Image 1 (cartoon, helix red, strand yellow):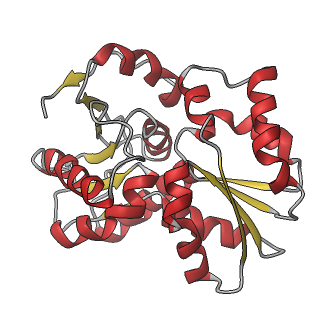
Image 2 (cartoon, one colour):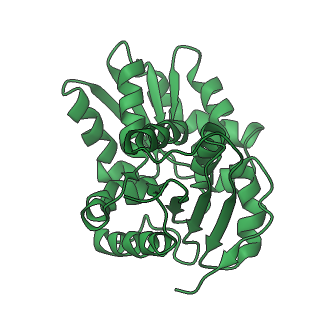
Image 3 (spheres, rainbow, N blue to C red):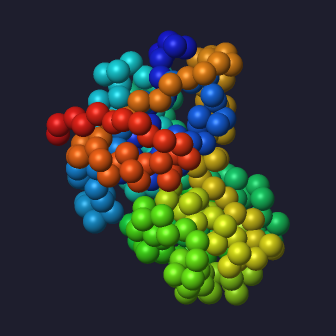
Length: 266
């Protein structure tokens, strides 16, 4: 078991996982966080399961070498494909983003009708459907891929007529399906939460997988006895491609200025 003073290691295929870092920092301000964004090999969604698993193991190894006490897979695609392989290799707590979101959605749903929006790769994997059905076998599940939400979030187009029109187009069928809970199944989507909420209406509860993952991280640290006391932690950032865009775009996801990042070679 890792020591209490170790950092939380978080990795993603790009910048979207910074919404998870943001939630962790708010929930656990005394913890150090090391983030790795594999921007040089992004996106993962078009790659095979074997390749995604290999990338995930390589990303995890980079963080484990820095003596992290926990791994957080802040990517829906890697969580869907590689979580079992990661847990088989590393003897430390490992948290993905799918299971916490699924548990929260089941807890909040009253009509047993849950929607999931995510990237095409995540929807195609069936990972959310599997996680939800494992909790409630007769749950009604409605899914919708919303690929344009990712570039809108990265470019900062999170309000105005363009993202509103895209959201209305994607979400029209879900709005009429009778769901009472909607999982934001991509780490980019919390940036568009106000527009998604406006389109879906007050009767639909939104589940932010980043927030639920942060709660799960806190619970796991406490369970394993490696949580830090209250204080002020630090965050450091590593990428596998040029740092300039990561620093510029990262501020939108982290909710704070990303002052620097270190490029590593793959």
